[in-house]
Length: 265
Image (cartoon, rainbow, N blue to C red; front, top):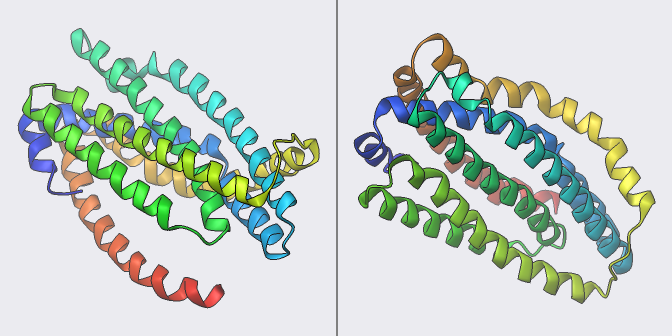
């Protein structure tokens, strides 16, 4: 999270990197279309699994996947539309405008894969088998970072950032897909569309969206607002500082998750 920042500043520059962080804030706000359905999938699947109703557990998962595919389609449609306006929002012109538009679209693809990965990871978490998805995530991140570093050293510039993320999420997607298929087969469930379950997911979505709205908008809008009202360079300085604090928080979260989660199980 922090060790790569000097590479970004050296090969991309603080101005371009600040603009990129601002575009990432736009993507983060668009991710609200996710609605938080993954939490429902984990709860419903784990409840059915705990009651040894494996067919129902599989039904909740496969219909959750269907809902997620709809969410991803909506996300892509909105994201592609927004990408046409990204250069104007960030006030970039000429060749740089096309660069940011295309990089934004690659990042959009990566975020779409991330949303699907979240859904598939939910099945493993619900069945208390999180090891393979965690290994997949670590492997994907390492490959993605390696791709980014290689591209930076070879003069790809800003293209390196979204492409590295997309490659990493692609690796995670492939590994999660095979593992989710294996878990689904073990449940003995079938690929059956259940309108009742889909309706259950979609009816709870507005409440889940409302619960996430304030936090997500306030958190993700910061780099965009700083860029618009101050400068991309200030955005870079602020986000590096915030990232350092986030890393400390993540370290504490690992300790918290490794202890308190065990009590609930």
